[in-house]
Image (cartoon, rainbow, N blue to C red; front, top):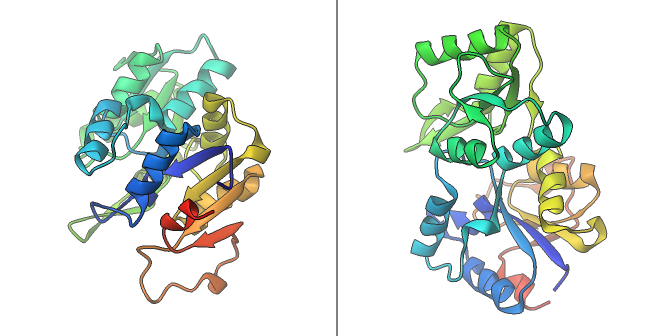
Amino acid sequence: MLANTFLISFSTLMIDGRPAPGSREFFAALVRERIPFAILTNQSQRTLQELTDYLEGHGFRGIMPSMFYTTVMAAADEILQMYPKKRMAGYLGGRGMREILRLAGFSVDLDRADWLFVGLSPEISDMEYSYALRLVEQGAVIVETDARRLVRRKKEPYPGAGSIVRMLEYASSTQAMHADMPDTMLIRHAMQYLNALSEQTVLITSDLDREVRSANAFGIRSIFVTAGMDDSFDMMEHDVHPTYVIETLEGLLRR
């Protein structure tokens, strides 16, 4: 294969709720050949076990919770390295975010906090926005764990967590810490998690603008998978260029 270690974007494995072409076979080859890898995701709704069960239910055999590395994990690792005594956290996100924060040793759901973690949450009330801004006004740093500006549910558009972070930054006149790509924190800490070297690592993704950009900025190779792209997609219109381009993950099995 092209690398000793793979970082695999979760969205590359699944397209519209179905396994991407070749994804189960590629995953099986990694497990069979004991090649180190981590599945990267900014999801905060599902716990690690729920993510495991989800992929297992779609035919990914041998999947384990330890194979995932999330943006919440990256942010927690960054904070614990830089500010080990600041362990009070509020959050806007799902039970997956809460699980990771507790596992990392943070005290969660406090009236005062050092950090405000923000991820995707389907229904955020005005009361929760008020709670978040109060924490920030009292000194909490906003931690963006999902940079998506827009998400779609049943084809309907909704503001993504990235848009919520921009709103909170503007309302509080502060700047957030960014754990999601295109920033490089997720890649950096995922590589530490795997004890991987830059020259041996490749990011596999179907996101050109955010994730390939992050790989380029960090200095690792990238594989851009075009499966699932509509006919209007034209790579030449983009200013970001991956190291390799393949149509499906089956192409990697032949290398």
